[in-house]
Image 1 (cartoon, one colour):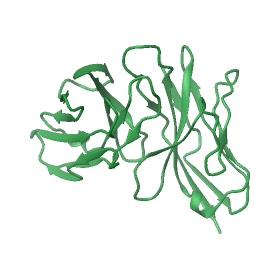
Image 2 (cartoon, rainbow over the protein chains, first blue to last red; image 1 turned 90 degrees about the vertical axis):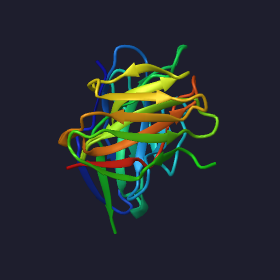
Image 3 (spheres, helix red, strand yellow; image 1 turned 135 degrees about the vertical axis):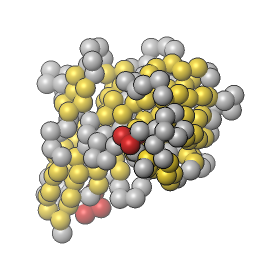
Length: 113
Length: 112
């Protein structure tokens, strides 16, 4: 069974402080990992995926297969980063239809001024 | 590009009734998935449609059914509504072989 665990339901930091949102996963095989973000009153949107290795809005995430983790990090948090963050995984496409996404329960990040 | 569009945005139904939710995928996308998001929870996978067939299904009862049309749009039907079906229903689309789904704004279903 595939599972995503986000141990922190709430995370509060001050502006300019580093932030790390934790994500651990369980998957038999090679997964693809994602971070989705949902700002207040907006739709869920893709923040980054491990395969592209991009840095979006200053956020980075490294897939650690040994620790089965995909933590999201940003060195200096901004107030506009306040949002709900979801970690998700799917299988890597190998033909047929796409794999489903399995989400964690999410972490609500609040960046205080 | 309008992205993924869902209708209606809000809906109130009575227990035992049936409901149909609609989704138009992003231009160029051929795969549609449906998710249920209860309050305070992450989205839960209901099922996925590709080439007008249900390809994968999550742990949801048969009361939940769907359809995909030749233009790739999709419907989610829920029969015999229960209070516990109250949730935000999200539609997500993607192009086959390409990861990273695009989500719609959702339909907020309230069962009373």
